[in-house]
Amino acid sequence: MNVSIYIQGERLELFKDENIFINSSVQNIKDISKIFADFSQSFTVPASHRNNRIFKHWYKSELTNGFDARKRVDAKIELNSVPFKDGEIQLNSVSEKDNKITHYNITFFGEG
Image (cartoon, rainbow, N blue to C red):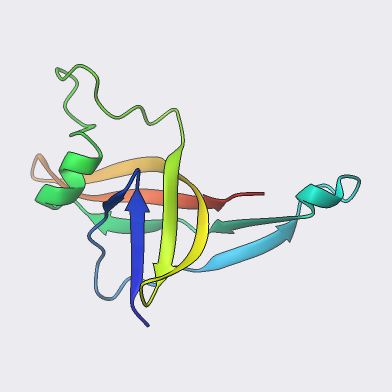
């Protein structure tokens, strides 16, 4: 199955061997419109040229108008080029090795 993730309309590059698991859970049984909420377990994406551009080189504090990791941003998941889920992505952390960013850790939250 071919999985594609888009953040604000731009396609993320994914690791070929990364598994993305989507969970559905009961959120608020009193509000029927919000019974199920979808979210993913955290997963990583490479710090490629494209992904660095999408995350606006978040790790470079000298940049202005960069990616604000305190806020979730619009995202969507497609399976085999067919829309699957709309929602938001949250940037959890960035990993580095030898002073170079290696990957981003993110979580997908589906629209409730």
